[in-house]
Length: 480
Ligand code: NAD
Ligand code: UDX
Image 1 (cartoon, protein in one colour):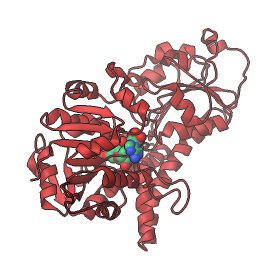
Image 2 (cartoon, helix red, strand yellow):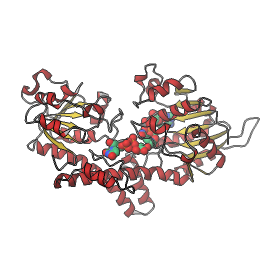
Image 3 (cartoon, helix red, strand yellow):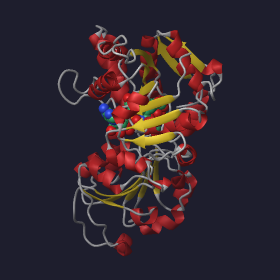
Image 4 (cartoon, rainbow, N blue to C red):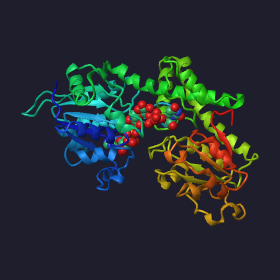
């Protein structure tokens, strides 16, 4: 294999940061330089206070602490890091296009192309370029054409310039990124050049058993990432569709999930009904798949996958609608407590969080929202809702608070107790551990009666809620 002594990763985000930290931790002999255009993000990665890292992931601080300053650096010196590298990972964002051809579905590849051009311009000697970002199938062709235009034979004593392109999609899930990186179900490497493939496989081989390193051609690798996410998201839409049916029929989706998941052909994971999937990947990647299917003349296949997203959107609106219905058909001027804003527990990420769509619906109905999340910055919530926070009302007033005012406003709660104070309902939208252990008997008197708990994550103990006198809706539970 081609010896790798120096790695550059372009993109210090949720994937680039944790992935490179683990590579640096497991391969102390390799220098790993993570670069990004975003100066604030790089400064946060370099912060001596490890609680200020830009990505919150359990265990990430310890990994960064071991490797940073030894063989792991974070900087904005993109060209210098490329020039020094034997291997460059492209780990930049690939969001859905918002305008132009394919708007709303196709991936916006401008940052990937910019990286390929920058690598073409700054690389020295032989460089292996690894697609780490999730990309439409056949993107490696684009990357390769840009790089090939920069290849050259040795001239005037300078080294020849050449490239190999590999696809190495990332399967980590947020909240468990370090565990997923340290013991992955599999590592996927797609490529054509066996020497380049072997070089990358050897890096992972420092801690991943060889049988878990899967080698494929470039296109299978690119397509596997999109379809893995589509399959996972499809399970969530499937179970959420069953949840709705359970609520009408007296069945309980958790019992149904256990019964169907015990079939080893189906498996028990990823069958938790909830407020619909969020996160930066599922919707974006399925829409990208839908776009590709239409592009390749497969409209029925496109429609099939598009419905996974449609069901997800429906589930989110369904929850807002049922909150309004149960609160006597109106939430105008009523206070509602939103517990959890992140798209899942153990992350500060809010991209495509179900809480955003549900909060929007309720604000549209004129509700006053108190929003509490243990890890999400209130400024991020304001950005996501496109609405500045109002100042919190006098919590001392509690359930006897003054007349209603300020329709369609929100403020940031600092604890569960001050968030639910004076509220007509508490909606649990993220499965944070602390929400599983709430003392509803103590919280209920703070709320205006009759009050509801809407548990979209099925984390509360139904008996504890009922004995506090609160009314309960639990996703997928037709028996409450
Ligand atoms: P992110 O937005 O958190 O990070 C991307 C970073 O790239 C940003 O900090 C941005 O400033 C930087 N960047 C963009 N263009 C650049 C350039 N030309 N030069 C230098 N820096 C540049 O994104 P992410 O969540 O880390 O996702 C990255 C890729 O990985 C995406 O394709 C995504 O689909 C994929 N992915 C994400 C996850 C996840 O859980 N977030 C999991 C698997 C795969
Ligand atoms: C996902 C994929 O799991 C990961 O392999 C890929 O690399 C990136 O996309 P992520 O979005 O970080 O990871 O988290 P994931 O655990 O998959 O959850 C996605 C969404 O689905 C969350 O909103 C989560 O709450 C929801 N979910 C998940 C459910 O509603 N029910 C489930 O059973 C599982």
